[in-house]
Length: 329
Length: 271
Image (cartoon, rainbow over all chains, first blue to last red; front, side, top):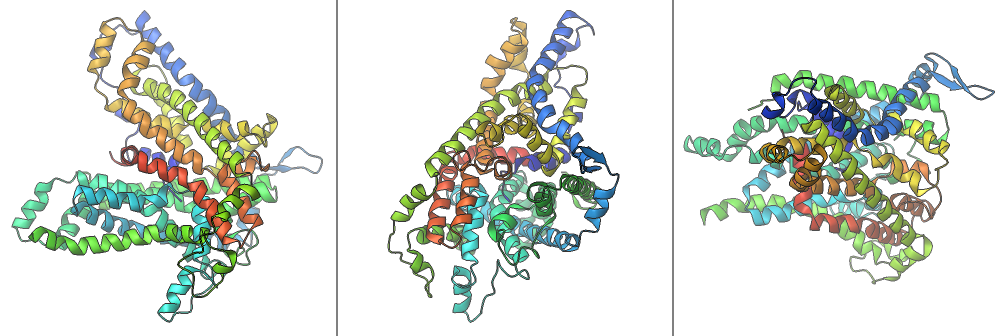
């Protein structure tokens, strides 16, 4: 929902090709040392010592739990307590869950709506790039405020704006003669309503990334094409877009990863007592319910595993497709 | 002059966009100063009756002050721990050579790629087994360690020049000395960016504290807000006052550290 969901940021970044293969910093002095010298061993020891605290924590709270989850997904709690191996049963009950088709569709629909925010943020970033620094930093602040706002607060603000009877949005619509629907309590509109908030709260974040990408485009390209008589719109499509494609790729990967995990707005903007909840659940919300409301842990673990696989496949697919449209200058 | 003329349509679009970004917050502020009666009037009251008492009622109806303190504690502890652990590991990954380094780095990246749903449940059980459910320690624990922070700082260390480090090494400084008194000061901009992003993430973090605490006095503001909403579903002035108070610190932090935050994000987002 916002920039602060940072792990996925780096995931995308890592994915964007800055992996470990970039290799060690060149150290000519060290390179001359024999392979098993005392200095060498000392460096090894320091290396392990310095990553030890982090890896102890990561192993305990992240790595081992990942392994456990994979295992849990094949088990369930027996009648007399204790885990029992049940094979693929959790997966089959997830696949035959009557809530699944709707939740899957809602998740996909939400992600697609949020993707629409990408062209929007490119346009705004490009416009911001045209105005002078003083105005640009003012705009940057204003567009970024939703990103730093607590998602719980964002959900509350929008639940109020979307209110069917007294909400500001329906009031404004009524001024132009439109009778607005119950945005957050009618499941024909809830996913659209959440998607709009998703766009609103990530626009500023995307703009920062695109603004950084735009800065890297040499001015001479624009000057040269101006001399050739290209207008601003033409320049946007033939210079800006292609040279911005690495950033666009990065933001799309992140948006898909974030979109497919959306859950907080269902919980907070719609709420548990909402009549539209049943028709508005997402996959991540099903996980939350099974894990922490109904306590069906095996099923929850299976959902988490499926979600991970889907994300991996989609990310891999995006990397495949990027060769066709991303230009690394 | 010709340039200004050409720029005005650009400003018009940007102002319209900015208005759409800011208007919800203005409406939040206005509603927070209305009476509950005023919120159900059509047309809406754009000039509220200045019910400042809504704000004091937030403190009265919830353990807001305590929850605020919890959020601050949770955030401070996580930032200090992350800066310490991540910078050490990041330096080792960026500058030291030891067997298995790349493999370990890949393992760390795997943590980043996996959605949080995968480790959430076992994390919960672990904290339960440690007897830390419903405690602030339980809320804080997993967030002391961050693959993201390490990754980000490693990128930063890689971008620093080697010369200073080499000079210190030739002067006989040991590895930890070099890290602590040469590299860390050089990495200060990166540390600040990472620290500020950690503050943002920690302050706004919802799912983990939501499942770990249900005691009013132990929860951070994010969870406090969601329970406030549960109890006062339609008292919008109260909800708006509470949500405004809860999100204000990060907006202030952002205004103060604007460049660091945007630089930090740009650092994660460009090659």
